[in-house]
Image (cartoon, rainbow, N blue to C red):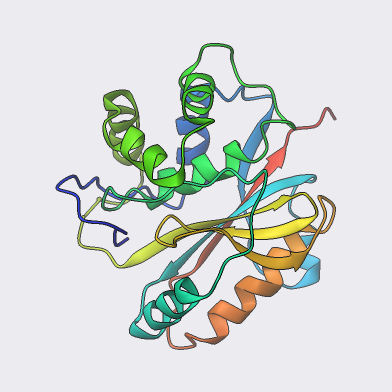
Length: 232
């Protein structure tokens, strides 16, 4: 989980575990009855159908390789179209990509969910609403409350945490009819074309399949969906 800019601060990585992420988000101000993280067990259509709907955002964990780094740097050199309405932040803290992926996810679905008033998440998004992506990154870097919450979530994981990792979380969200890849190590959101709330999971799965195909020798991939909770 490499960082995007020099920073002395490094966190231990967040585990790709929906239960851990749920407790993390619920503790920060996402009501348990609003949304929750769920495993995506495969990218075939029948397995995607098993994911609770509606899906609000998708998190993807993948290994960083020389090839993926070259592609990222090449894409960052391309001119980016304006991404009006997209909540995006950079990553300056090492190994913080799991938390930033969750912040990207929740930050782009605040119209679909109701956060606990005056909770950490409520205050964070209100405080950073008019900041640029790097200002948001520095705000997070200096936020002691989030650092402690992240550390507690890491401790709740099932595997022993190590800062010597080379995996990275990104988020996929649908904003204004477009599928966006949100990666704090990039300079801006990346649009992957038209999407909709009902096709978000399938559209993200297509992009994820393409990324996996470029790294066929690795098994270290994980997909987690954030779904809106609905009454039975």
